[in-house]
Amino acid sequence: MTGSLMVHRRRLKPDQARYAVLRAELQGGGELVYDDVRRLGTLLLLNEKEWQRYSSALGPEPLEPDFSVERLGLALQRSRQAIKKVIMDQRHLAGVGNIYANEALFAAGIDPSKPARRLQPDDHRRLHTEIRRILGAAIASNGTTVRDYKTGTGEPGNFQLELLVYGREGQPCRVCGTRLTGTHAIDARISVFCHRCQT
Ligand SMILES: [Zn+2]
Image (cartoon, rainbow, N blue to C red; front, side, top):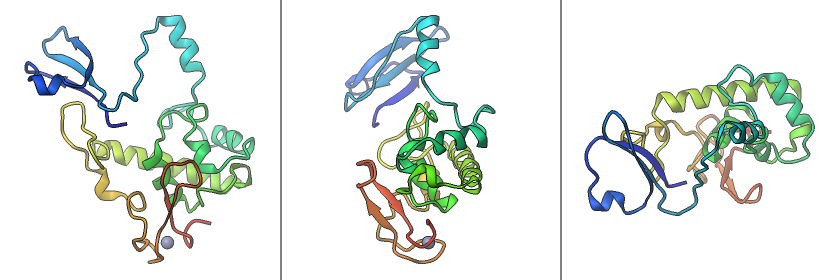
């Protein structure tokens, strides 16, 4: 959400420190700086016990082995909510944000507004595969820079060049040519999808 967590090897210039809410000196030299322009971020200082309590309320990390098709399927079967809302809910899955939810649902051919419990085992398998594939590809491209995202060393990401739906509402679907639909009706965030490819 606009902020950045960055390692600065050189002394910060005054304008670089304007939005810094945390500056931590590193043992090997340099500084770890958390910039929070919009003041939307949260930093928690937790001890071991508090961390365990905090992390036990989160779902699995999508790229870790404990994120299985079965576990995803169970979470989806129990929910009447729109599939997009469920995969962005940190209690079910940790770390799928709006851009990657849009892209994974397109790649899996699933309408983002479809109630999660109506998905079939075959949908679970495709969605599981696509969430992992898309996050892996985005990490390999150093993330997605739509406005101001930067990597930990200050470089922009490159995955924005590979987005198939996010940011493309009104443009033709790259698979079938249908005009992509954009809506805020599902979760107040932008959802972009293809009526024809996502059923
Ligand atoms: Zn399409």
